[in-house]
Image 1 (cartoon, rainbow, N blue to C red):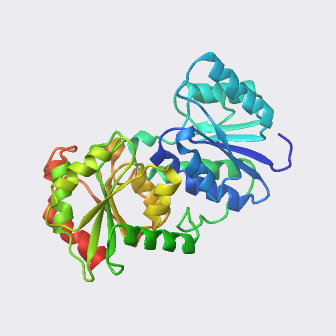
Image 2: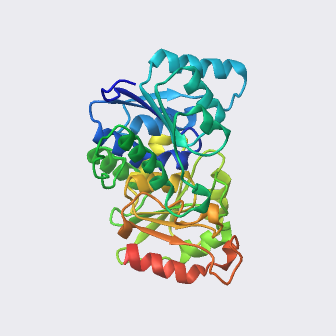
Image 3: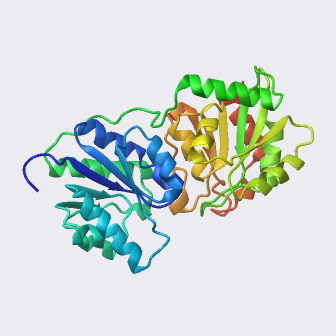
Length: 344
C-alpha cells in the first residue's frame, strides 16, 4: 500500500441483522475520519436494505454466504478483484472472506486475531470478545481505530446517535396513516412489543410479554403495537389473544426491512429481546427496553443497543437465578420501571 490514504475501503460484517446494525458506529467513525474514501459494506442479501439505508456506506456488495460451495467462493474472489480495494477491515472474521481477501491481494487486511482466518490478514487486533468486557459496537469500532493507528491518522470523535435516520416528514406521514388505519387515537403513545426472536439469546415467554404489556401505564394513553416479521406472525397473534383488555393492534411486516425500520422510527418505545429489530430501534435512537440472559456471550453489556443512554433500559435474570432463567425476571416491577422511564 502506498503512503497515500486508501481510497476504497471494504468493511465486512456479513452475519445477522443485529450484528450488522451494531457495526454502524464503525462505518460512521471510518467515514467521518476519511470522508474522501469510498466505504463499501459486504453483507448478505438479508441485510442489504439496512446497508443501503445507512448514511455512512457508499456502496453495498452482496455476499451469498449461505452457499458455501466453490462457485460462491470464486464469485466472492471475483468481486474482490474487480473492485481493487485498498483495504479490508473484517469485523467478523471467517476463513472464506480472509482467503478471498488474501488471494485478491488487497494490500491492507485487518481482522480480529482469532480463528484460523487471522493468518490471511497482514494486520490483526487482539480483542478477546468472548470475555464480553465491552459492547459489540465498541469492539467493531476498535478495529477502525486500529486501522487509523496503522495509517498514522487521528480518528475523529465518534458521532452521536442516531446512526440511522429517515426523513422526518415521511416518518410523520407514515405514523399518521398507521394511526388512522388502525383506529388509534392520535394522542396515544405507540409502544411496539416485538415478541419474536431470530437470535440465539433466550427471550421472555409469550405469557411474560402479555403480562408486561398489560401492566404498562402512561400519562396520556398508549396503544400496544405487536410487531412481527416473517416467521413471527404466529407469535404476535398468540400474544394478542392474551390481551383482551389491553388496547393493541398487530403490525405484520411484509414489505421488507426498510419499511419495518420506518415503522420503528415512529415508535415512542420499542420492547423486545436481544434480536435484530431492537438494534434497528437503537440505531434510530428510539427508546428501547430490552431483555437479555446473563450468559457471558449474550449479556446486556455485550449486546447493548446504539441509542443514547437515557433512551435505553436493559433487564436480565437476577443474580439469585440461573443465568438464562428469563422466568425469574419480575415482570410487574419491570413494567413499572419502563412506564416511569418512558411513558409517565
